[in-house]
Image 1 (cartoon, rainbow, N blue to C red):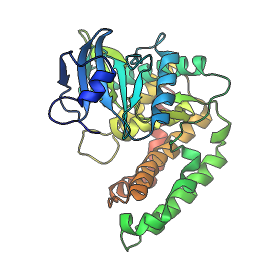
Image 2 (image 1 turned 135 degrees about the horizontal axis):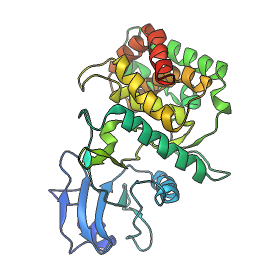
Image 3 (image 1 turned 90 degrees about the vertical axis):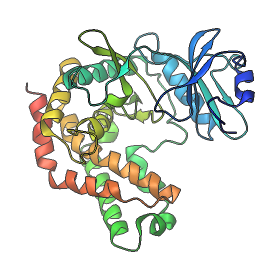
Image 4 (image 1 turned 30 degrees about the horizontal axis):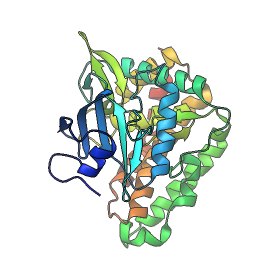
Length: 317
């Protein structure tokens, strides 16, 4: 069941006790609404077809919500914070004040990096002894095994893109093994902690919230640093390359709160490549014809030494 018009389906609102509430769409976001519910401002969002993912993400949010400003799951669906309508899952989360940072100059990238590091410290502290990975996740160590190569011709076309993709995956796996990525401590990472998922408030503005955990998974924290840089390391939204000064700034802020080891420094470019490969894997498995991330992956490969120097500069500033 999908939303029609400017409100979620009535069945969803009734299930959450919001059928009489004021519900408005959140500007710039499809299938996300803000409702004035009995538990205060409530963010209501349509998710994908897996209720197992919703349960995993909400359990993870609940563990850190008291110690870090992330949305808190709200149990409005008969005691649960998510509900499955037969076609898709819906979630209810607390609303956090603030404005999306995006490419605004303030707060500076150093502040964004420090904020992400503070989240990781909490996530590591709250991490349970045993935690299964996200049910439908795409972890960096597993990418080669979850690409549906039967769909690759439709997504990548008849040219050499498939061979480039296989080569990138092979080198990715070798680099992860060489740097012993699998031996690093893991925790629930955000999965897409760019400045577009950071809220800020105040004068001057400071980070106040981390939102949209749609890609959260179980990884080493350094992966999140790279996932942030994939977008926020660019000089502006349309540019498909990194600004090395922005890389240094974000890493410096992160390192000031949670120092990066030499191994983690070396892994930042590797995990950057991994983010692009994740994006390509999802396009292939969905049969979406789009090889755009391959060009970005080529740029990362061609400038890997410079990226590594920029990261290293951030841990020495």
